[in-house]
Length: 343
Ligand SMILES: O=C(O)CCC(=O)C(=O)O
Ligand SMILES: [Fe+2]
Picture 1 (cartoon, helix red, strand yellow):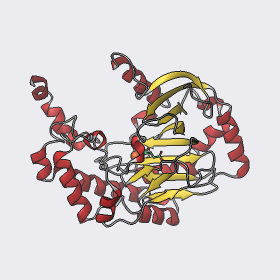
Picture 2 (picture 1 turned 180 degrees about the vertical axis):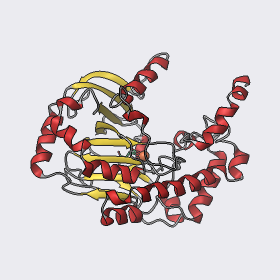
Picture 3 (picture 1 turned 30 degrees about the vertical axis):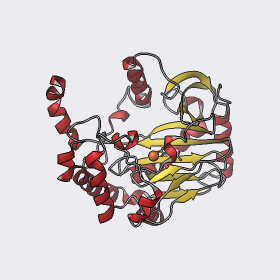
Picture 4 (picture 1 turned 45 degrees about the vertical axis):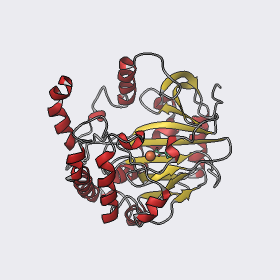
């Protein structure tokens, strides 16, 4: 209890950061403050500042891409790379065999291989693609920051084992402010496979959405839904309709399609009845959403550049106590993106 009081100033200050856990922070999770509108106010202010940052970056993408993001909350670029570059990139990724991290969440195993200062120098085509203005400008615009995204080869093995559906397969918003995730699919994703699914327009909030968020935020800290308690509000399809949004769109897309999404909108990973493998170059970026500028990337500093991800993983490992359940992220030794996981 005393510790909570000592931490009170930090809890208060985190109102002005990307902190999102209702359960982990008694200020953000306070029923009274959220009844008065704390959560909704953070969403509105961060949304406005995010729009302003995006306007600063508007010149780096086409009018068509800006219109797609505004309308849908995501941008889809089919045939993103020319065929020869795509094949060369795919060959490089297929031949990778390096230290990977895995987690089994519900019935799904996800493997992550970082694309960073350790792996990228051995992957010249991939390196060129992920540093290219065509790629980085789209990510910067949707993410509303000129920052180095965290990059990985992500492999999703659906129906890897018997279990509950993967938590990613329930509709949710990742966080309260504009934020970026992107997938460059390295193989086709068929309509009955684990396609990324998004509710078009749900990155915009209307009055009903704000009223719903206010209601949920009041009890999220005590509620039994872990995702919601951690600040990624889960929502049912019925509720999505009630808030006035249209039907979810399953993005079943051919290889060499780039999807760049604002995952503050409502989305999920489609469930599939089959064992499937989905490999993509996955990018993720999140910054303090209240910053009124797009620059200032600490992760681009010499010495940290391209190493931030492994540093943060090393810190996580340092603080980890006790046995690691398979549901938590851990290094599993050398893996290749398409390699069969161990049972
Ligand atoms: O992998 C997907 O299709 C979506 C998963 C998801 O919800 C996320 O990464 O935030
Ligand atoms: Fe998500």
